[in-house]
Length: 248
Ligand SMILES: Nc1ncnc2c1ncn2[C@@H]1O[C@H](COP(=O)(O)OP(=O)(O)O)[C@@H](O)[C@H]1O
Ligand SMILES: [Mg+2]
View (cartoon, rainbow, N blue to C red):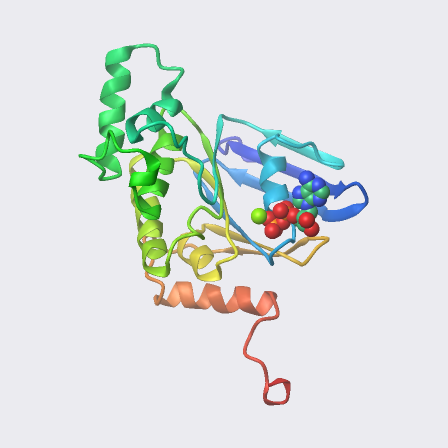
């Protein structure tokens, strides 16, 4: 019986997906609670982006059902911004439903402050660093009344140090503006730092190999005990634990 106090934002039941004969996802069952941060990890090509496209309703599963309760916004790996619009105008794209001009301007100002880009309001994406561009992306999807953020490897095009900073940024921003998040990454450390729940996918056709809960507070340092323990467990599930002497 489902708990009446819980809101399930996303529900997948027995979802399988094929692309004209190519079996990609097999029998996935997953429920995402309101406010939860679920991180999907799995090998390249296993079907992570396909899974996000199913969760957003962009594609329909070959079989099984997907239920969505809430407004969804999506963040891509890179280049999700309109190159011909400024920082301010890109953020405003997330506020198209807000008719009150004064409220809209106030909100844009708050969001620019939230992502620490004061002074860059009139810059175009090509005038920003990769990290700054992804901060604008975060502001755009957090703008207005979205409930669910689907993020497809949003930091993977960034260098390691910027990526680490962005993880802390995401945690900080979500504390101020809580959302339900499904975050796809191939980066195991990232999953261990960010997730309430990690979903480990197998190779294609992908099933769920492990659901792992991490209950420690965020932000989490990459070298903290809970992040290291979770990283170990994920590596183990993926068969990437230290090779034994005879394997190397
Ligand atoms: N629109 C599509 N048509 C046909 N095959 C696709 C399509 N999108 C993805 N694929 C294939 O499905 C598999 C899973 O792709 P994808 O979901 O992008 O994996 P991931 O994001 O985990 O790298 C890959 O083999 C890919 O080539
Ligand atoms: Mg992908």
